[in-house]
Length: 319
Image (cartoon, rainbow, N blue to C red; front, side):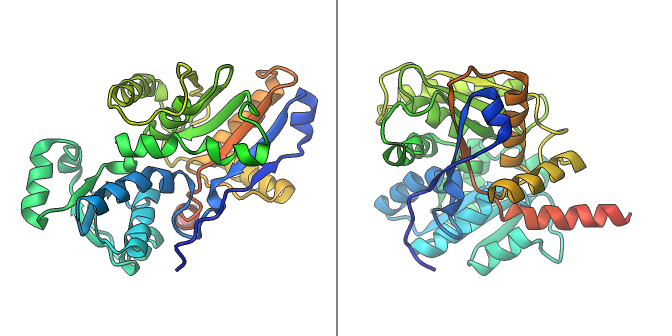
C-alpha cells in the first residue's frame, strides 16, 4: 500500500436547499486522502506517529470499540510506517471477527479484549502500567487519538482547504461531526476572526462535550505547542442530530445518506458524517444560517464502518 497522501478535494454541493437558503456549501473530502488512513484519523495519528518514531518506540498500543475507525486506521498506519500495533478492544471477543477487526488483524494488529469495567479505566495510570507490564515499552495512543498530538494534527485540517479555496477567510462556518471532541478543538484553534466551528455530537445528550472541548482547548493553549491562529477559538455545539445515540441509525438517516450519494456523489458514513450532513441540511431549511454565508462541511472519513453497520442492520431486520 502506498505511503502517498493526496490533497483532499474541495467539492461544491449544488443543492436546491442551499440555493434557497442563499448559502454556498462545500465539502472537504478528507475521505479521499488515502485508501486506508484517511479522514480526521490521519490528522489525529500524524504527530503521535512522529513522536513514537522520534522516541524509538517500535510498538503502538491504542483503544477502541469493535467497530472503531480509530482501530482500523491505527492498524493500517502501523503497517504502513513499520510499527507493531496492539488494539485494546472494549468488551468480549466475538467470532467470527467483524470487518473492522478482521482488517486490523490482516494489518498485523494484535487484539486484546477488556471487559467494560476495566475498559472504563483506560485513561488511568494504573491500567497503563498494567499494559506496560504485560506488553513492555509501548507507545500508548488514547482512544480516538484524543491527546495533544491529536489536537495538533487537527489544527492543520482547514489549511488543506485553503489553497483550493484561494484565501484564508473563505468560509464563515466549518461544520464537523463530534465524538471525542478532538477534531472540533483542533479546528477551532485554527480559525481566523469571523469564522466559527460548529460541532454535531453523534452521542445522545452530547451537551457534556462543551466542558470537554473547553478542557482540550485550555490544555492545548498552555502546552506550548504551535497554534496556527491568534484569534480566540469560536465554536458551538448543536446536539439535536444524534438519531438516538452513538452508532444508532434509522430509516430516515439511511434514506438521506442514499439520496445524498445519488445527488452529489458523496458517500457518508452512518455513525458520523451522515448525522452532521443531515443536521446541516435541516438547519438550512430552517433558515439557521444567514444569506451569503459560506459553509464548509468536513468529511471525516470512516466509510469502512458502513460495512459492519449494514451487516448488523441486516441481522436485526431478520429477527
